[in-house]
Amino acid sequence: MQSATRPQRVLAVSSQVAYGHVGLSAAVPVLQRLEISVSALPTILLSNHPGWPHVAGRPVGCDDLREMISAIERNGWLAAHDVVLVGYLPSGDHVALAAELIDRLREVNAQVRVVVDPILGDWPKGLYIADAAAQAIRGALVPRADVLTPNLFELGWLSAQPVQTAAEATEAAARLGRRVLVTSAPAGAGRTGVLDVAVTATGQRHSTLFDTALIDDAPNGVGDVFSALIAAGCETEDAVRRLHALICASQGSAHLRIAEAAGAWS
Image (cartoon, rainbow, N blue to C red; front, side, top):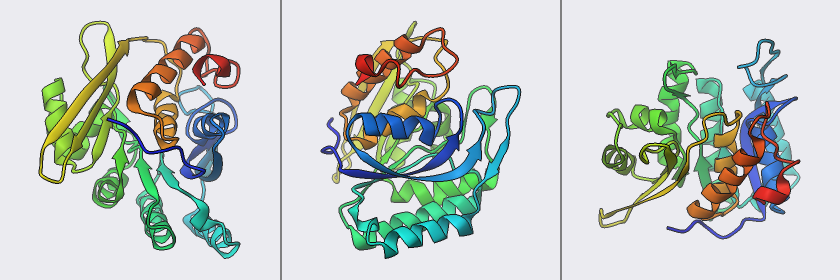
């Protein structure tokens, strides 16, 4: 299964950190390295990933984001975006904002492609956003997406069914009615990968597993890089290959080496 052609400009909506590579701080340098222009709207500003002992920052108000979007539109730039990439949304209001933005973009550019990374949580912690925000993502963003990139936990939560095997993951992904690229898909001992699932207009399911060696100590931000590669128009197999190269180059580092290892992954 192949992705879309490479876009000219991506509008990315997600978290941003001052130090490290997660959210926009991962997606933007990846897209720019691939020679794609990016407009970045931060939903939350943090010093670093909250998994570290010390973290500071706060969400960006939705009113402020709406004013920023309106200014971009009044300057005549909104319609220039080929792709919307939606990542971390800290509240139900931010989900509503993202849905409004997608609808607004489709009014000015009917061909815009929407990639949604539904950042809800992971095993073993479960949800790490508010339940209301997670429910809003399922109700408002899943139907608007062209491509979804959930991990295995997020797929199970969105589809409301268990996903432990590749067959169960395929069934759950098909129920979402969109093209779904399931990260951390079951791939056998010592392996992981991405399960690419699509459903045709006639209801036929097509699924392909692109697997690779499992690396346990990957720094945070791997999912953000993957969704950025998909937004960039990479084929799934190519995105997995690039991501694996980046992870290998980042082993032993506290953060992804996006800039330092650009020659290896790009």
